[in-house]
Structures are given as structure tokens and as C-alpha cells.
Image (cartoon, rainbow, N blue to C red; front, side, top):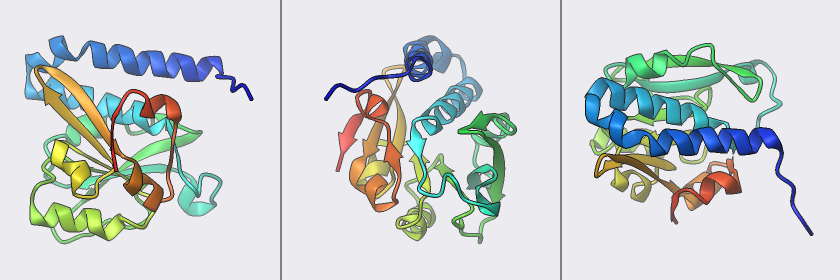
Length: 183
């Protein structure tokens, strides 16, 4: 059986590859541009993920990206507000120090995922349809779904397939081909 790929998927994948290829120049500029690049990649990755409640009612009207209130990537992620993924506008929700994400979060981004508090956030949403994204290779080994890491001035990413399946998320084979796969 032969699979067909639509042109939009190929173009989105091409943009994602272009962003990744451009990382050395951009990531070297500053932390602010590093966060802007990572935010753009989060936006692109979201286009290759299908949530089980994609056709849901009230809670499914927006694609909520949650992150801790003081996370340094905050301004770059906030710039995604209003962008559209799967017909749903992105909404950014900031969590205060004591808040825990709810299933209203479709994406949970953690820039410093090594702290015990952040690891508990990952555990809290492990069985919910929440795409967890972090900034270290250890993130996927700690139960997170996607890690974005700068290595030799390039952003690389890994995907924990087991964690994505546990969360009920379907990640496109096209994206999986670009990632380092973890179980």
C-alpha cells in the first residue's frame, strides 16, 4: 500500500528543516534569539502532532501552550499567541510557582526541566494529552516527550515515543524521521 504526502505537509516539513539548518547562525547570536528559534520550532512541531481531542468542544477551541511564569522563553512563546495550528489559535498560559498544569494545556514547555518541581509537572500530565517539551537531553529520559537541545551551535531534538503514546498523542512519521528516538 502506497502512502501519499500532501504538499502542505512537505512544505511545513521543509520550513522545519530550514529552521533547523539555520540554527548555527541564529543560536550563536544571543539567548533571546535562541528562545525565538525554539519558540518557532515549538510552533512547527505542534503542526505535526494530533491530539486525541482535536474535535473537542469548549476546551478544544484553542491550542494552549503553558509554561512557568518566570520561564526565560516566555516572551518568545508569547509571540506565538494568535498563530493557528490545526485551525485553533494559540493561547499562552503562564503558571505561577504553585500552579499545576491542567488538561487545558495542550503543550507544556519547560526551559529548565531538571528541577524536582519541573519533574513533578511532567509526572502530573504524563497520562493526559499534553505535549511536554523541554531544553535538555535528559528531559525525554525523565518522561518528557520532546527535548530541544543546542549541541555545537545547532538545535537537535529527541522524541520519547513511549511518553507520547502514554499521553495519547499521535506524532507524524515525518517529524519522527528528523528526531532522535527515545523509548
